[in-house]
Image 1: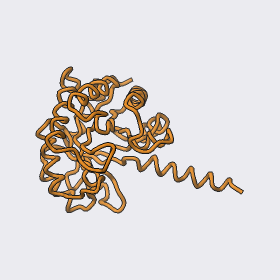
Image 2 (image 1 turned 135 degrees about the vertical axis):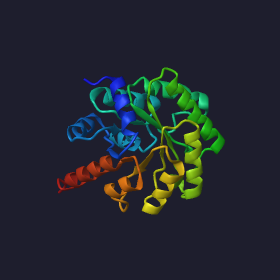
Image 3 (image 1 turned 30 degrees about the vertical axis):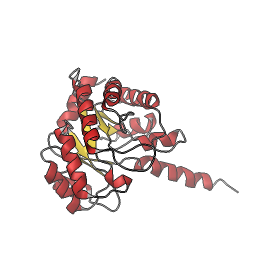
Image 4 (image 1 turned 90 degrees about the vertical axis):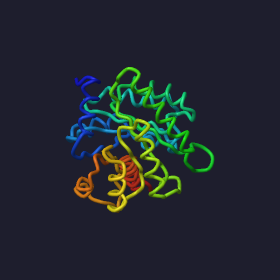
Length: 249
């Protein structure tokens, strides 16, 4: 069995050069199956996990997610990246405490988002979002864990598809200590190329969407990694629903 330290070191190496796909399993079975297929790393999906419990995205409690991460990270030999939503806190002190708990689950990476959870859709004030990223960085570094910190700007997913503002936030998160940057939403080659260039040399994650660039095109654009988000989980759910419908009279 690969050790936690070995998985974290391998995950960091993946971010140094090249391009890799980071599929998102939604439960233990899907994680173990993806491991057999030859992927180099996996990542959790909060929306996919919520689906398995019959809840909407952002309907998972912190301790439920920590148990989920511990189960998956401990069962596979691949590096595992956690979708840790917004750190399950608003203030930096809470993010610090919760990220420490997430690190203890054995994950090799984790992301922190900047969206407002609850109430009207929107983004947290930039200064607060930066302090939260710094808190996550400090939590990861307190025991030299080597966990990769991913800074996520959620603008496109909360109705604020502003490329310049998104880039400004990503740059700020990089300066605050994020090892990888991620803005789910942009899907044209032109927009993705601008993001990659603007935040270089920090590696960029892109959410795979249809329509959108191919894997080969993303690699040529200098993207470091591409993830599926909840797409695999929802694809499986749609297939399950169609099969179940066929059983109805």
